[in-house]
Image (cartoon, rainbow, N blue to C red):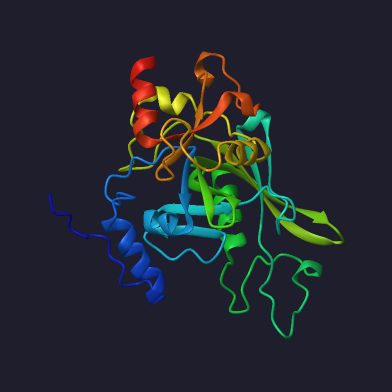
Length: 268
């Protein structure tokens, strides 16, 4: 069956990125319509951009498309921001972002993270901060945020949908930084389907980054059953919903989409 490219890429300005995303689409590496992407899926930077239909150049993206927000996180050593996970992997504490590095401001790490742009509009910090406060005051429902985590250069993991519950400013190294508190949500975003309830239950805790990296290195970035490097997923050998742990590499493996679905069918 011939595929029809329906994703509106006209707003992407980098021709090379657009061309490579186009190639990803026609290679069948992602399905931009009715995405079935699940927490734990391993994707490339280009596939992540294709999934969100935008060239992601910044870590905080409030209402990127309509009412969908996206953040990019990293818990790797020497990551630029102090993100962390709490409550056995259900809570993400995400640090706001610095002012851009310029000739007038060569050291962003010594300057308070900004609430407002020079024009007076809210920065990404300010937009997420205000949304969290509006939820805390009962004015709005919690913002739903799609979260991607950088695992390795060019390799990302989709961590799922989170609810933005709270935000505050705190002192860190003699400056003020923003902190966002997000909770892993069970529900998907509008028009996004999780294939099975079992799969959602299996990922109601984040796999720690050290475990993900250890599994990635151990399994050499390939499906342990067939050696495929496409459409990979961090799979719980014993599902979390059945007592398996997210905290040890021995219970996590890399599976391709085909073998992940086949395993889930057998469990059910």
